[in-house]
Structure formats: C-alpha cells, structure tokens
Length: 126
Image (cartoon, rainbow, N blue to C red):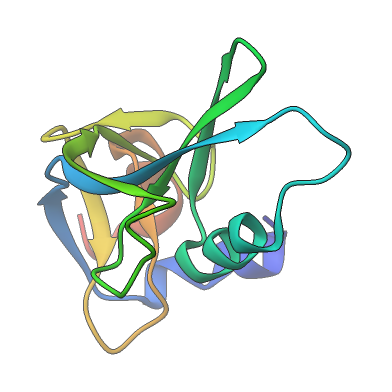
C-alpha cells in the first residue's frame, strides 16, 4: 500500500466489527500447467481463494458471494472461511476477532486493531 493510499485512511469513517465465519465454495484442482477456465472465472468473480496442497493437486476454497455456481464442480461448505486479512499488514484476523471496517458508501477496507490505531485514527478522533 502506498503512502498516498495510507494518508487517506484517517478521512474514512470507520466502525468496529467482528467478521463472522463465512461460507465458501470448494473444489479440487488437479496439478497441471494452468487451472481450467471455470477456476479462473470463479477466482475472478469471488476475488479471494485459499489453496491447500493435496495429493495430485489442491483443494481450493473460494469465498462464496451468494451467486450461482456449478454444483457439479463446486461444493458449498458452510462456515469454513474462518479469517480475513488486514488490508495494510496482511495479518490474518480470525473470525469474531475485533477489527475495524470502513462504513458503507466508501471504499471497503478491513484493518486489524494495530493498523487501525496506527493509520486510521488521528489525535482529534482518539
């Protein structure tokens, strides 16, 4: 994240939050030169994925956005996405851990408590 991007954080309106465990779509992606187009499409659509090494390939979780999916290729797993990452430091924030998010109507950012205190607060807002 650039210094210019970080300098905008104090101007955003923030609220404390605890991100719940969320649903994910899972699938198996075999080893190969490139994943199938359906995997690239789902990755583009969902934006977030986690790849777990498995024999012959990877078990992949895509953060489920509530949209349509091919049930013959993906399995909906309830409450398996159990963390999020701080937009600044990348620290994993476990589900239900206090964090801060921007209020609706602004660009969405999620920050750990440390980065929120360091980059999003000013002496006037403390």
